[in-house]
Length: 346
Image (tube, helix red, strand yellow):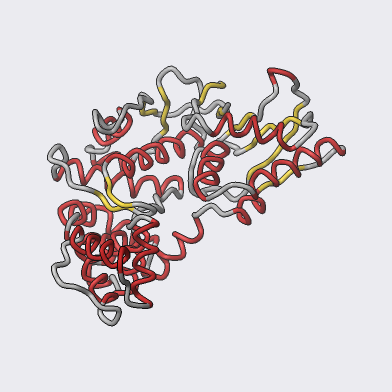
């Protein structure tokens, strides 16, 4: 469960509706784009509320809105694996793409939120122009843009000549990426840099240009250089070490100490996706936007026992009644497996 404390201000009301991407992009995506077609949104102090949810916005709901928007945008309107670039859609013209860029800038300006799954090569081109994107940045972005199996295949091919099935797969991959010549280990990296430029910059050029026109000048205030941009990507990415360091608690007894150790153990067992989900549950954001997460303890037992996150703190109420680590793990996984967290406590 998640909530935020009472805070009243001018609000944007949104519906949290999730449907399959193949049928319709989620309502929140469309509604937020519609709201940000108004240029004046950049000057407003915006607070958000989800219809039929009681949580009031003292930053936690805002973080959740931007996280939900970019999660759905990258899942439904972008291409790639670990990192992604926008895909062009007939329904989105200049006005819609400029709205997307205002959402990007507003989230960073107000909440420190930035969608780190946007390919760095694309982001650098948006902020600093195409000329700023180095071959190394293009190559690194492409490798993360491709699937893990494609990445492994290319890593092997960059070191040695591939034969048999691997050669067939490499040629098939090159064909799918529009490469009409047979690469060799000596020129493969250069070929991949060209492919990266095509995928990261040429294909999404219409979106890139419209986003850059509005967001570029704003984002340059946050990132004076490409190195500053890279540092932000590194700083906001959740890792095991960062999350454990963010957890703070005042321990009163051995039961609380044990529950905290169980929480640390749970964090250590999460992969990258799990860390993002846990960060979203605790803070409203799937990237690091806050300095610490405070843990307080409850004595809830039975069916009432579960961790309760107050994202505006952010604070998590952690039961001190766990007798074993599997008990905490089961309850945390039940929460995180839902993928959506309603702000359902006033």
